[in-house]
Image 1: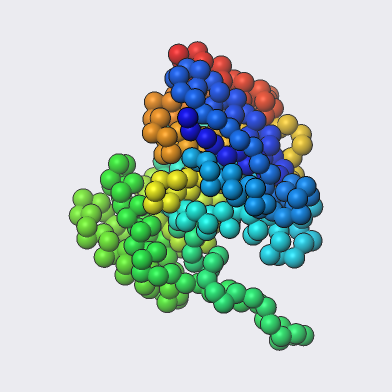
Image 2: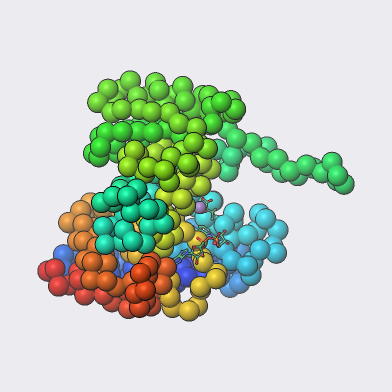
Length: 361
Ligand code: NAD
Ligand code: IPM
Ligand code: MN
């Protein structure tokens, strides 16, 4: 039996996680597989209860599990702590590094019934678009050293180091090209090679890897142009290959193009296909505790877990379809309720998706 470490975290994390667990339970009933869920504290809630954002027991549970289902961490309550103790820096980033989860897949697809929630003009959206952001997740300016502060007064300095090794660029590039082969066979590599030396190496290595994939078209684009092109004409993109920081930024933009931050799922994988699955968005303090958050990103992340960690493609696809069907039926949380629709809450959205998943059996 496969074990899942469930780390709901802070803010809307526990609210959307409850719906993902409901959907996974329905998928188990329909498809006859069994998952064992073990819950642990992470992030701000773990600081409050155990004094640290990633307690040893939580890390140990993750090590003993076959996958991690993650909610979100952070929020105003912990922003006054020293940076190295804050939930994001002291739990999520160490988890990514510890398990070498270098490959972050963030699929931004406009579900046709949600076209009206996309902030772009209808003639740009067309019949929807489908972009996969492949973001490197364990290096770049996030993890490069030295990193710190020194001096005082007006000359006090803060610094981070952007750095990539050839090996790091090569392995994330291969993931992007492999993914493109299963899609529309186009990789756009996002960099800033006109300014940053790290990105000159990035462009060089991506081009070298591309030689092993003659069937995949490679295009290089500067990150500033990429953010503009994504709103001008998202159809031009298939796979967007990004470093850690540019991928962070591009994926929020891509999420909003699909209608809401609450729609974007993600998988963070290592080379053994061990994975952490989480929404690309955060703990949404502005709406936490109200029961109105959109659980779809968490539910689709759970589907990605079934697909990538457990090889349960049929169940994963059924969850994707149940989400689409629910949206077709006009069920909307507030963030995607364009056109004057009456929004439902988090639990009602989860129930509707469970209903579709069960009805499909
Ligand atoms: P955020 O993604 O939490 O929120 C941005 C906006 O998107 C807000 O208006 C929010 O209400 C909305 N939103 C996000 N998810 C939603 C959902 N499921 N349904 C409806 N609306 C949703 O980003 P932020 O406000 O910059 O960050 C808040 C906190 O979350 C910070 O502490 C940040 O560091 C943390 N964060 C954590 C993660 C993570 O755990 N993976 C990711 C991003 C941000
Ligand atoms: C994300 C988040 C994280 C990141 C933060 C919370 C550390 O924004 O997963 O996109 O920057 O990677
Ligand atoms: Mn982000």
